[in-house]
Image (cartoon, rainbow, N blue to C red; front, side, top):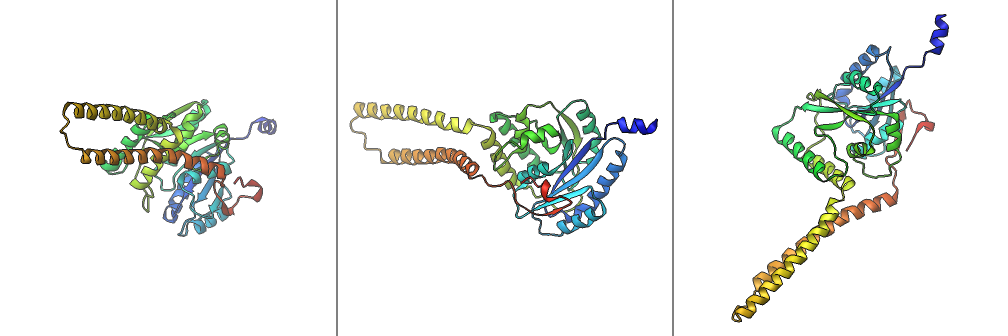
Length: 327
């Protein structure tokens, strides 16, 4: 009787924990210990696999992953032939995960893997995207303020606003990953892409902790580049701004021309304005350069897309068969 019941019972869902790594050798032991404990605690509720994407680390990260995977076949890993960037590394990781749902997790343990239990509750309620909302984070006031300004700016002009204080710590249903796989963008901004897909989404508030070891790879420079990617990938406002500013400057030019003509007619003794002409010329050249630069950013993205480069090139794999490679 029990054998019949076991045969009729559907298999437990497979959840993929997707973990991009770059020089995280010092964090892997603590990370795996918590992942393994999480798997034991949730063994009656789901099956887990741990999918790592190594962004061409220069330390012993890949060797450590190999040792862990030799003891635990749930550990699967791919290593890229070069550093392809954080967002592309995440997307490539998603494409190699096999789970019914995927949870994105950083290797530094700032985002607690144990929150999977709460994420899973909401996934089972029908949410296709469950994301973590950071209540506090162990960063300087300057960096926190800079992030808040960035979220405000992106949401002010983006076609796909993202919730404030939300990073890449999230759980995705398989159908969301399949939708992401249809995009052919060379420089993805996953938060905007996922927000724009329109699936049922919800957020879970949590406190972000300090790194266990190592140092953050995300300084102000990388935050600025990520923000620019978000703007140029998900907003046409800069292009429209170029048109609006151009029309505005044309109007200012007409007004200025009329002013100088009237002034000359009313006072013929006014000397020729060499300084004003130079200032206007320099301002006009600078403005045109700015607007051409904005247009160039979009043309560059079109060019890169047409060039159709692979998302990433896999150099080595661990517990991933050749038939499973998706890049």
